Image (cartoon, rainbow, N blue to C red; front, side, top):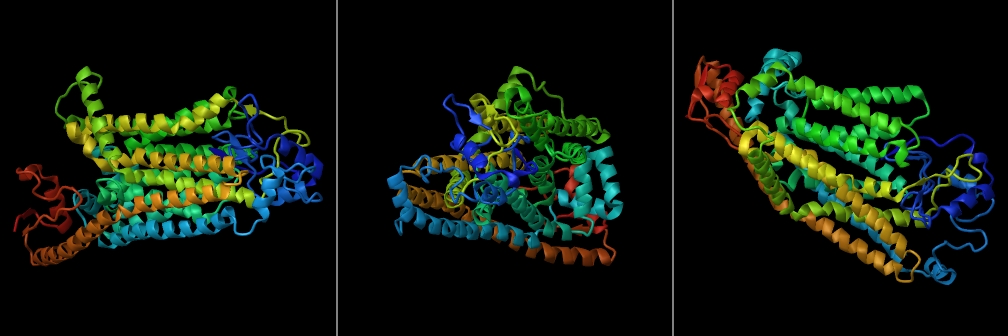
Length: 602
């Protein structure tokens, strides 16, 4: 992670020869001893100081004012020595042919890449748009009935108090539910669209920072393709698409936290290492409040995000060389503190204590039998995930993003130096081991985070808890983002290695076409499931509307016991799911919703 903060003052006054020299020294980003200079990122870009991930961008696109001030008067590429006029890793003869030969592969790639991005935006965007459109056909089921009547009769703060005192202690969850159901089912109809729009914008902004970290020029079209493909996979590649995007209780508990997490990361990148103390303090206060809200919103997300922040915070300790100061570590610590306080409030609430009291006695989660059973559940869950190869589409679209980074650097020179002679800042290296650890952080986050999710599910729902696939979003989103990031790093690395060779154009073009086809295929395999979801959702809404009109008419005539036919969807509970009516909480909430005493099968 890095902070998109401003560079120092006086950059524009730097003389051309002072700016060009350090850039030549740090062009490739690695020295012979295997360390990484701070003035270059993995793609050859310059970074000033570290935010949460160890670097702070200047905040300008490649080819901005700093490049003009550093290179004006010489007319040369910033990372090109004045004597040769050639790129360092390009032989003079072959490099000249690559730049001057008309119709070469790289020129063709610059035309093909936007076309591939447009196709992916259209394909993935169509699926996401269908999901948003289906929101109009969402009708209450399962927990909807209970949240709906409580929000109507108790109000936003009343349902919040009810959740804390008698349900589960998730006060933020209850507050958001009260807002969504404040106007009846209307809020549930627009919630999928709000989630998709907020997620798309957040991912594009996060991707823009990532591309700048790699030294490239952000391309909105490619970034949008990445954001939409990742979303389409998260929403529709799993076994519970209806619950992940359309069912409000699940989206509030498990999808919204991931969206908030992306925006919290953007907040960290923009405030953690700002020079103004007021901005940093405001960012820390916001981090604690958001962390507290997440701690009382979703336990699975709390576990996964807390693990991620803890690992990144440890790597950002100044002794490891990734961060210049303690600010990134402090931000991570404050975020984890907010999560912990929120989780303690939730766990100690009267509602959570009541809920635990309803569970039958069982063995300790630390017993050998329970640990073995939990591990088996974890394997079953991952067997389901790995059996869906569509998830790998995130790596394919990420590879396209990496190629776009290389092309952007080829057309426009990278940003100027931030350390070294003439800058007033000492050069600094980051140990290779620290960089390797940073790149590998997503692996333990996804593996250990998913195991923690299974532990929580088994504790709360028993041996079948791992099948509650709506909770998988808490670690599937980091997994998809990590695959996309790894693909981008691979694409940028491969493109940079091939850039000086005569066969670079055809090789890069072939890579773009192949990965574009793989990404498109990962989206295409989702179409049958989305089609079935559309059919089921629309047909149920028609039947639900007819039954709703009948029940309301009977209740209006004074009936106190009305007939209700269960309308199942998404593997969710409907009235009469249990033989004992007194234990049928869904039927009780349906009766409350319609203002009658009881419902029965027609």
